Image 1 (cartoon, protein in one colour):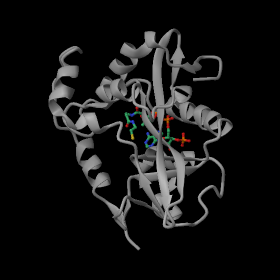
Image 2 (tube, rainbow, N blue to C red):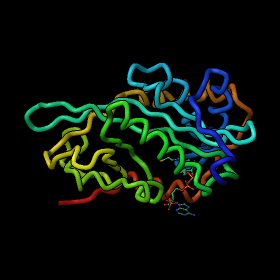
Image 3 (cartoon, helix red, strand yellow):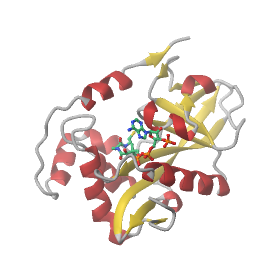
Length: 219
Ligand SMILES: CC(C)(COP(=O)(O)OP(=O)(O)OC[C@H]1O[C@@H](n2cnc3c(N)ncnc32)[C@H](O)[C@@H]1OP(=O)(O)O)[C@@H](O)C(=O)NCCC(=O)NCCS
């Protein structure tokens, strides 16, 4: 894909259904049988932590091929000082168009914009393979732990948009609760029923997800 073949533009309400369908296709059976990301996007857009200025799609020939969204979360140091950071996600690319640089373009576009509007740190859980080339590092590099636990989840990844923004202090990460409704399986199923029927199944990426999401870096 070269630079004239696509545009990156803000998501509009007319895109909502198409973006949710794409997310459902991209995440289906990836981490668990089925997925909840289309419902997550639906609830995230209405959550107070959601950042509409960083809600973007990549479009090519009139077709949406990828999307990225962000919300606000908090870090807190040991003295109780807070710092607002970005939580990135969902990020997804339409199956059939993955591994062609679309995710990379969406992230680089929105990182630059996020920096312009005053954010200096991005955090998300994810498979490190997808993020280390974008400059993400393990949370352990920045001394960021998850709530009260002195552990460094392997999947908790941190990107400084401004080098030195995290200055070596010990930080705890308090992710916003925008994804809490996704724990309500009945609500997820009800929303999923508005989409074409898809079979839930096991696939090996679910074990990969299990390994990443249950792994920690130790001291
Ligand atoms: C993960 C996802 C968003 C990445 O977007 P993409 O457009 O497919 O990825 P890109 O082509 O931009 O590549 C991004 C990076 O992934 C890595 N990558 C690319 N192709 C790869 C491959 N075949 N194998 C392993 N890593 C690869 C590289 O590090 C690459 O960066 P680089 O080109 O600077 O080296 C996309 O594949 C997707 O939607 N997957 C399903 C949903 C998902 O997993 N979302 C993320 C949730 S954490």
